[in-house]
Image (cartoon, rainbow, N blue to C red; front, side):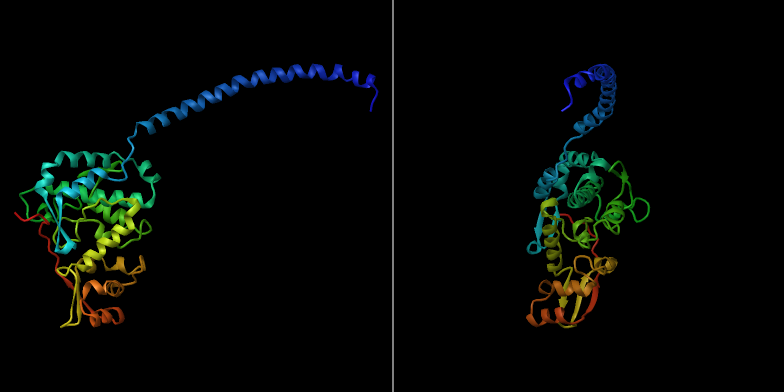
Length: 303
């Protein structure tokens, strides 16, 4: 150990160094405070903006309640009719739900899960379609009465969604069917075009937690509806909805296990045919597929 005298000799050299260090610390404190103030000035408006945005109801409870009041199941639950007159009486409630959809920002949407996004888009398509019909109801027999070119109900940008004016085609074709977005051919039973030939409008709003089961259920019901999909044992041919002709490519991409329409026929053989031998034929051989002409009449409750 060095002698005490040597230790004392260090004091004059170390003591003065503490003063500059203390002074530097005092100088840093105002700089730190300024940085914190600047950070707060940037973050506070963002926090307030997030707090100001209403929390979106992913249960879609308002739409679910409207569907349960105004959609009636027919054909053993495999098809439905829409009570547009009843929707008219609930137009204000429908309008409030549509406003919640239109209020969603692109940033909010981007932060959601894929299932939440899909449910949002499918519910939006169906709810805005009902609203479109109501603008002319009861003075229309088909949604195509709006027009094929001018007034086309699918191309008309008649609502706001995700910060811009949108059309039904934008929801279905540009967003839900966009390659890499969801890659799910069941989109064709998710969206309803207000026509008898279309897959049924369900009585439940789509929700993320049950989305996969809901889509499977709707496709099974659609394939069970013999007015739109069936096997004819006399001709040994399958007659499918024209939807499968228009969008057959969606069922040829190996998404959800479908590499072609014959995979669809094989999977739903039990819904298309009654006889055990016919079902085995649909599952084991390639059969002729024909298409049933689409029925564009309004899917309204008969009066």
